[in-house]
Length: 99
Image 1: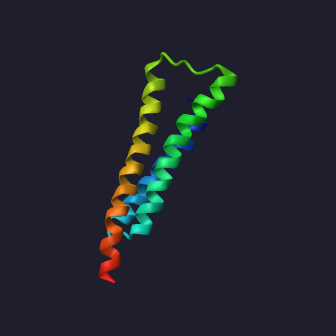
Image 2: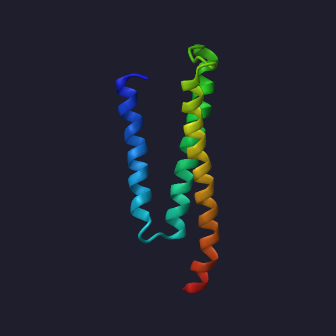
């Protein structure tokens, strides 16, 4: 990864982390849903885009540990998004009953 892409991706990760940390004080089911969707789409989208673009470019070294670590990090992000979406679903009935 070059310096430019390292800065781009670090901005994405840090801004997402800042949003989630900000939400922990007072969070609505809608906030959790949007955060979960963001994580899920970004995580799965990065994996799909890497595979899709490499079908034509043939530049990804699929045997490299770094490649699999990179994909695992995005997979973890997608999984965290699904967990966040599940949490949002559990909060909805309580929020609706509470008024």
